Length: 593
Image (cartoon, rainbow, N blue to C red; front, side, top):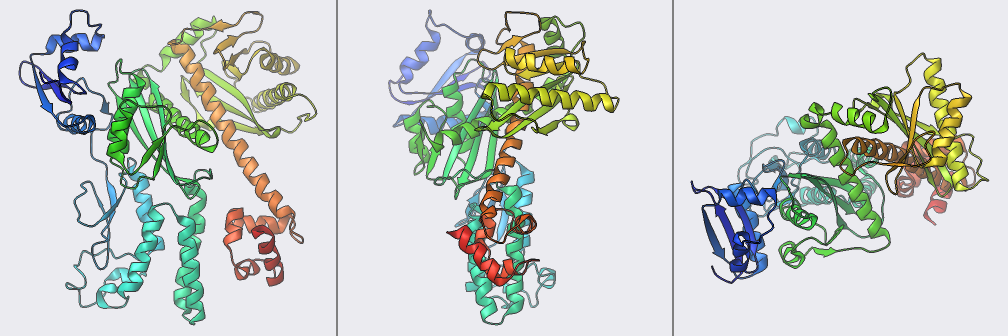
C-alpha cells in the first residue's frame, strides 16, 4: 500500500464496490480496518466479512481525494456509504447568456456553454412556481430559434397574448431584451427590491416619453412583484448575502438545509435528506452533505455559515472556493444558524412523522408513552400548549393536536392572550397565560359538545402544570390526564408526584412528546412574530400626522409592508382612497427619514 493521499475501494468476491473511503495515508487507513484490536461497529464487522479485495487510487492532495471520493460514491452507490435519500439529479434553471437573445430553460445536466445556472431545485413545485412568476413578470421568449440568424416570418401566439414582444421579427431590440434578462437574473438571485427599483425607473422614463402602454406593462410587473414579496420572503434577517447551513440528525437519518440570504432576506431554502449513517459521527455526515448537497449549487454566496466544524474543513474550503466557510460565535449570524437548524429539525420531524415507515409504527410510541406514564387510558389524542412572548409583549398561546402520534392540523388553535397582568413577573405572566388558554380551549370544546383529548401536555415545569390544573378545576374537569415537560432535562411532571420522571433518551414515548412540544413551540413562535411585525409596522405609521386606522389599513393592504410604502411613489399613494398628493408626500418624508 502507498503511504500517500488517495481513495480506497473495498470490494466483495464478485468485484462489486462495498465502500469508498478517502485517506491522508492509504497504508495506515487500510491497515486499520484489518488490525486485530480494531473496535469495529456492527456495520464495519459486516463489511469485514464481505471484503474480498481492495483497490486504491493515489492523488496529489487530501482535497483531491475528497473530490474523487465524492465522484466514486455517485458512480458506484456503495452499500456501506452515506447516501442522499433521493439518488437522482435535480433540475436547474439555466439562462442562456451566451445567446444574443437568451432563453430560460430547465435541465438536469449542466452542459449548456455560457449559461448561468440557478439551482438545483430539490422541490420541483418551487421550480414550477418560479418559472410561472418569471413568465408573468418578464416577457422572455419561449421559442428555440437561433436568433437572429434563424427567425420566423411572423410572431407566434405568445406575442398576441403579451407573453413575448417578438424579438424574432424585430419588434424588440437586442439592447432592450438584454436589459430584461438582467432583471430576470437579478430576480433569480433573490434581489427583488433591486428589480423593483429598475422597473419603476423604466416605468417613469416610459411615461415621460408618453409611451403609456409600455408604462402600464411595467406597472403591472411591479404589482406582481408586490404580490410576490409577501409569500416568498420567509423572514427579514438583515446582514450581507450568505448561505446558512442547518443540520439535524435522528439516528440513521439526517437532513441538511441551506438557507439563501440575499439582501437581508431569506429568499429560498434547499434541503437534502441523508440515510445509512450508522455510527458515522456528525462531523462526517455534515461533510458529506456539504459535498453532495451544497457544493453542486450554482448560485452560492460569498460566505457560508456552518453550525459546527465538519470533517476535512480545509479540503472542503478549497473545493467550494471562492465561498468562504465561517463558524459564527455571536450576533446576528448565530441567530441565522439557529434559524437554519430549526428548519432542519422541522423537516426531519416531518419526514419521520409522515414517512411510510413511521406511519406503520405510529401506534408504537403512543403505547410506549401510555405505559411509561402509567395512564389508565391510551393517549391516542393529545394536545400540547405553549406560550410565546417577545420581551413581555405580543404574548400568544398555541395548541397543537396529535392523533395516533401524528399531527392533526385541523385541530390546531392559537390564542391572543387577553387577560395578562403585565405587572407581574415573567413566571406569573406565563402561568396566567396558560390558565387562559386551558380555560378557553376546554370551555369551547364543552360548549360545542366535542370530546376532550386523552392527554394534555404543558410546555414547562411544576408551576405551569399547577396553572393548568387550577384552570381545569375551575371548570369542574377531574378526569383529564395532564403532564408538563420541562425542556432543560426533558423532565416530566405529573399531578400528585413530587419527583419528576426522566425517560430514557431513546424512549419512543419521549421522542413523541418532544415532537409534540417542538411543534407547539414552532406554532406559537410563528404567531408571536407575526403579531410583532404587524405592531412594529403599525407603530411606524401611527406617528404620521393625518394617518388614522383606516388609512393605515389601506396602505398596508396596497403595499404589504413598511418597505413597500417606502418604495412607493407619491402618485401611487395619492391614488388610494382618502389620500392626496400632499398627504402622500408627508407620509413618504416620514417613513424615509
